[in-house]
Length: 109
Length: 127
Image (cartoon, rainbow over the protein chains, first blue to last red):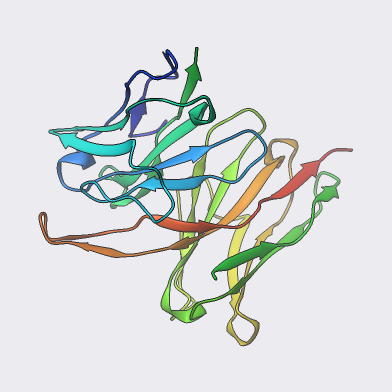
């Protein structure tokens, strides 16, 4: 089982803001990175570090961390943001190796 | 530009072996570790481990020891994943993914986001 816990399903109305969360003890020491995956495609990095966006990622994507919970926030959610989202960080229970969260399916209504 | 190009889909019988290749271009191959990630049908991403492209030393996640082997040919900037004694539940898409270590000055640790992914290789194990 993953040491990073995500809600399996989240929905949001078009144009509204949505927060996707990821919980794990390692997040107190290591920021998560976040990946967007659309059906049939490879994942894409959207946020890493404290709150860094790779070039080409819209500024409606942002990240934050509080205690053992990392959050990915999308403001003004667009239809094309409908996807699976995964957090990724260290696994403190296994020699600080890496681990993905279980993923969150975001539905845009 | 950075590209990771993986080999094509494979159909194998139980007990056989398979090797997936991942050819890198657009950066210095030996400067960044290569991760391998599995995604079973309809399931999430699973970190399998990584290999240091500088030393060739692999690290495997729990559940990926024994039948899974990471290797390199640095002369052609290519990473390989070999899986032996294939089972039906090895059926999945396998991704190579480039590590991008980042120093986090706030917390004094190195973060390891993945910044580039291969297109994925579907391995199907069926009799």
